[in-house]
Image (cartoon, rainbow, N blue to C red; front, side):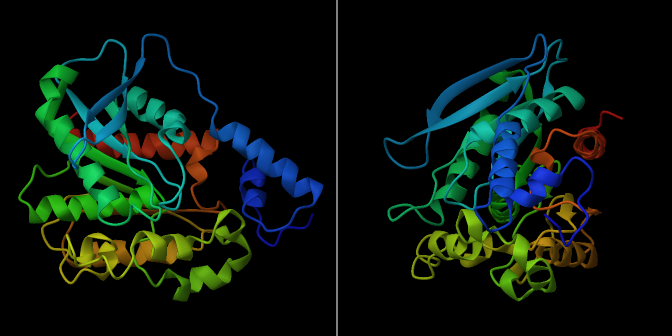
Length: 315
C-alpha cells in the first residue's frame, strides 16, 4: 500500500491504523498496533496498584492505578495521568507503558484516573470533575502515598490532554494547588479543530475509523449542558478569554495529526501571555504516537521527563 506521508520508521502500523478501509494489510496493521498498545513490562521493584477512591458524586467511586518506582526517595513528586479515547472510549489500561516510563525516568509516583466516559447519562463536566477529584485526592493523601503534595504534574493524551488543560485552568480559578507542569500530548483544545489546516491536510488520517472525534466532542460537551455546572471554557480551554496565570505547560503535537494545529495555536497563546511553555512538533508521526514502543518514543519520554525534573526541582 502506498502511503501519502512517510511515517517515521517503526510507526508504519500506527499510521495505517488510522486509515479507512478493510483490506488485509490495514487489518493486520490495526491488530499489530492494538497488541503494541497494551504491551508493557513492570520494572523490577516497581509496584502497580489499583485503588478505589470517593468520586465527586454521592455514592460514586473512582478507580485509580498507582505506579510507585523502586527505591523511591520520599517525599516523591507525583503525576496525574489522564488517558485518551475521544472522551467516549479508552481506559487506564492503554496508558500502562507510558505511566511506567514516567515513574521510572523522573522518578515519580504516577496515578492514572479511570474517569467516567461520556454517554447518554454522562457528559461535561463529570469527566473533568472526576479528574479534579483524583488530583485533590493525590494532594490530600500525599503522605500516605509517599508523595509530595506540592509537586504534582499533569499528563494527558488526546482527550486526556484536553481534560488536563481544562483541569489546569479550573485549578487556577479555584485557587487550588497549581500543577508543577501540565503536559498536553496531541490534545484537542478548540471545538472548531475541523476548520484547521491540519485537519484537511491529513484528512485521510482523521479518526473516523474508530468513531468521529468531532462527534465525540459534540456528545461529550453537549451545548445544552455546558453552562449548567461549569462554564464552557474548561471544556475547550483554547476558547477561553484569559490564559493568564496558568501553570507551566509542555505541548506535544504530531506532524501527521489532524489535531496538530489546535495544540500549536494554544501554545502560542500561552507564550504570548507569558506562560512558560515548551512546544515540540514530532515529525512524520500520527496522533497519539507515544503509545508505540519505539526508540523515538523513548526519546520523547526522556524529553518530557527532563522537563518534569526541572519543574520538580530534581536537576
